[in-house]
Amino acid sequence: MSLTIKFWGVRGSLPSAPPPTDWAYHVEGVLRNFFSAGYRDPSQISRYIQSLEVPNVGGYGAATTCVEIQSAKGQIILDGGSGIRNLSERIMTGTTGRAKGPFHIFMTHFHWDHVIGLPFFTPHFIPGCEVHYYAVQPELEKLIRGIFCRPYFPVPFEALKAKIFFHVMEPRKPVQLEDMTLTPYKLDHPDPCWGLKVESGGKAYAHCVDTEGTRITREELGEDLPLYQNVDLMYFDAQYTLPELAEKANWGHSAAQVGLDIALREGIQKVLFAHHDPGARIEHVMELKRQTREYYESRQRFASANKGVLPEVDWDFAYEGFEIKI
Image (cartoon, rainbow, N blue to C red; front, top):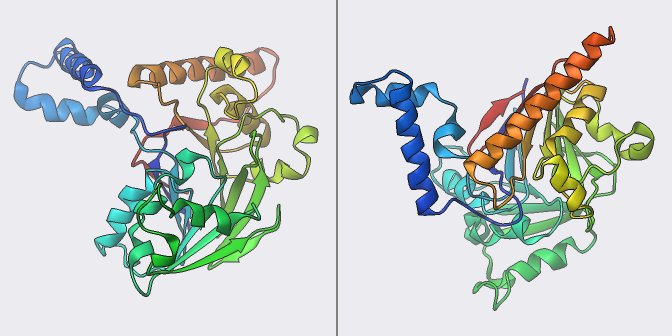
């Protein structure tokens, strides 16, 4: 048994893509590297492109947070950022067999970048569909109703054709959804924000954006420590560099190095970093990746020099459309 996780939006704060001039510069660089790599025949361009990592060519994406998790029997969607629109279009093709749902959406919190796509989730408008919302915040129903409200959106909540259900979860209390166990844990964010641990068939995914990671030690994390324990894949906020993190204290976002420290201590096998800054171009995220690799290798060297052993962590920076099985 396994979990399949697809990242429909990985950008933070607001949807953002490089302007056309930046794309032109980027494409020029890709073509320049094609020739510097020794290729000469234009018919080999496709082969060269396929040899590169996807972000090296297409970037990391413009859509904000939306993650889809599928188990053998169920599906849950985490947050309704602008990425949920592409998920909606995939659902409506009928290829998933879930066009009528029911659909289950867990909301970490209600900042604009996490709700902006909800009015464009087509199942809301289809008679016979069921859409279930989950959150720890007790005002869940009020907040969702407020999104479908003029002058922000022309279709009022009362006009939605689907049946909408609201489920307020208790902090740190597991909820069973089909063959998945969902447990919310508190993150470090200015407005209350709840991460989610999803477990099924002996596999576990930890959703940890938006968090600043101000609580690092096991003692500080306290009752929220289980979010980071016995986890196969952690999705962690890495919007900033370490210097930026110091400058933007209390903004509610973190750096990859913070997530790596947690993963190394807790034995997390794989980490994906996301919530990329809206101002971050492709090269900027790649520089974050370089700094993260430098930090990771330095931690490993230090441990080796002191006759210690750190676990290996398979990590990377997530891009829109990426899919992984655990």
